[in-house]
Amino acid sequence: MSVAGPAARLHIDWTMCDGRGLCTELLPEALTRDDWGYPLAAPGRVRARADASNVPLTGAELGAAVDAVKLCPLLALRITGP
Amino acid sequence: MSAAIATEPLAGAPSGRPAGSRLFAAGAAAGHAAHLAAYGPVPRHGRDWSLAQELEASGLTGRGGAGFSAWRKFAAVDRARRPARYAGRAGRSVLIANGAEGEPLSFKDATLLHNAPHLVIDGLLAAAEALGAGSLFIYAGAARLPALAAALAERSDARHIALLEAPDAFVAGQSSAVVSFLETGRALPRDVAGRLADGGFQGRPTLVHNVETWAHIALVARYGAGWFRAEGTAEDPGTRLVSVTGDVPSEVVLEVPGGSRLDGVLASAGVAGDAVSAVLVGGYHGRWVRPSGVVLGGGGVPGGGPESGSVRPGAGVVHVLARGRCGLAATARMVEYLAGQSARQCGPCMFGLPALAGAMERLAAGRGGPELVREVGRLSGLVAGRGACHHPDGTVQLVGSALETFADDVRWHLAGQCQETGGAL
Picture 1 (cartoon, chains in turn cyan, blue):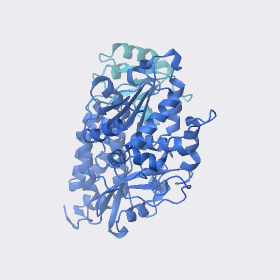
Picture 2 (cartoon, rainbow over the protein chains, first blue to last red):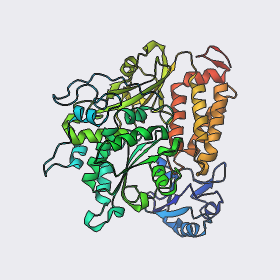
Picture 3 (spheres, rainbow over the protein chains, first blue to last red):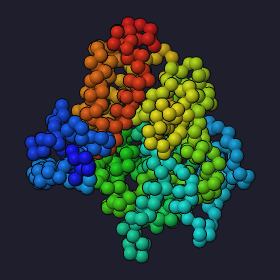
Picture 4 (cartoon, each protein chain N blue to C red):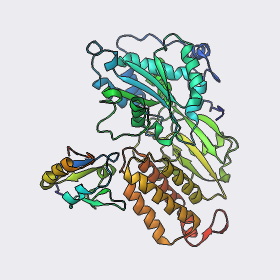
């Protein structure tokens, strides 16, 4: 994560997410998977509780994040401002 | 739940305005005539008076749990609404009085709706006038509705307020769940991209307040911010209702000034201080504390935990655990209940809370070593912040406060003993 703060955030709508894991494949630096397969912000990305559902992204990750938003089969992702 | 009211005598009420209890000044099950006799008519204010300004100056915070500034929510809806001349009734803002009270230990909202329904109605009407609102609702459990319907029928100015039957579920009172219920008939929390003020019910600016908050708004509209601040402290002005439950002589609703000492509140409820082991403040999403020296208040102070000598009142629950009862066992039962109350929409909550409940149950039963405490911490980290509503966060707060407050008991349990109940596990 750049010292200047995130370029954007990946918002996870937990009411939609089913833990298919596509986003974790596309964004291996930003996301891992929890005990049950749901995307989990990588260690060090969560500074405040809200970051767990609005994962900070670097500028270099934006392209892959856009792909994740488009490819998520459950439409559970959205890119939001930093 | 019976509607016992016992109120603290309040000092400093200006003459001509209710002395003693503010919210129950009209007496038990007050009809409209008794209500007007106690509080007087809503005054006609001059052109330079504004409810928004009075609310801001009053410092009133929400009484439903989160303790957010009532004025900020009001102002957000005020900004988001379109001028009435551009919007038909169906496009105007929506006001909802939330009396769902899904918290099992709370009965102050039921008590308020039973005894002072006209204050809640007055609060809605005052805000509706200020905001040009198009739709007004009172959302409450089935048992509350007949009395509310009778109260609405007693007056000619409230016929447009609609009653909604809230389902009996812990998360049914969560504000986005209230809006979902209005739209879909199912009280499920939703992923809220923006605030309800900017797009709630049918995309309209929506203001959801707890019923007690509406009652205080009614009084601020009548008597002003200065009167409101005559009780409580600068940081926690006004009064609030608390439900005192658990190991108490009788469960009771008290109206107490902001910043009250917790031991004083317990004494008012007839609880002897030396009989108390710990108190759960705020309900199942609240915190366990040892009551000595703790002040109940700071509704709007972020992170007002026990270390600062004050504990956030949350939904106003003061639940007493007597000496000789195990706080870890009590907490384990609560977490088990909360896990069952997940709306099962969000994976980390749906799977994480049962896992957390299982770990707490093993801790309560003394089945495991120090790794069990680490596992509770790890699971708490996995569910915190990962849901559409704060159900997982509230559960994590309860668990965290139990590990802190009952730290000695945790060590005894891991050694196979319970200090409180005095036996082997």
